[in-house]
Picture 1: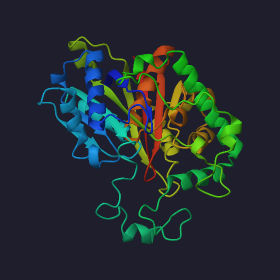
Picture 2: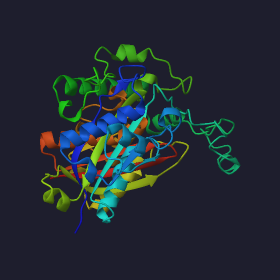
Picture 3: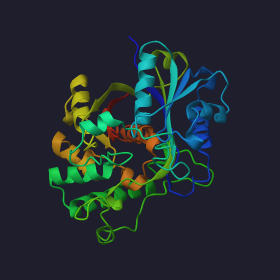
Length: 386
């Protein structure tokens, strides 16, 4: 029986907005990472049968099928195809799911799933409104009058407003969110300073480490930030993910192909699902996605030794913890997007790369990754260490 396994996972450092990676064209950023993944893993790029790359803002420098363009920038053979997908923040996690489905079905033996986003060079939302708005009368009529739906706006769903709604529903105070953000920075700083990211990062020029970690932050500093989504709200820039630049990639194949070509699989893609929930609140779908993945896998939350839940906003993982009963000590053990950053199209593969390396370093059998996505969706993936 065919399976889907990972033989390599790599990412760039995550750059701050207008930071060390902002001078790199996103095609070159993704292309360099593909080249580094091939070199470090040791596969022949000619054996890659497809590159599936996630990217959210597909305009300007990230337009015109950046997946294929990244293959050309990597210097891989012209015979290697590439495509680009958008499932919002989960784009490259979905790329892994599509890669797994492709090798499981026998359509290919080696597929690279990747993601890239240069939010410095191609600002978030830059693809909206160029030739019209993305929501027509049917959606606006259907959700008219729903709390949190801004019917007159070009994009009437607002993630920050959704985060405030989650905080209110689950009763998270400003202090609780600030404490969570502070802990994310502390965990990321400890992981970075302890060299725990070294094996998963491929340097880009002079950028060798993640730029978003704020070692100097404090509850006092976080408490001084404004609440932009509601005058009496609790969500701030400090409890939201950072606007960032970066890329990540995962090489997916079968155990049979790996053995025949001299590779030792790192982990099996045990279960891969997608779910959807309220598009106005938008950020709660990781909860049903996790339940669906566990049900499909025949596992319980206690069986999972590590969880990566994307920190789009602090209320997201906190609500996920409250609803799943997961162990907080197993959540985002090396920090999350609040500290490390969230280059939209790259984050799914980045989380998977970090999760896989954490599992290997700590001999954890099962790990689970999930992330909220625009439109009220979420992917969930369970990895099994091999």
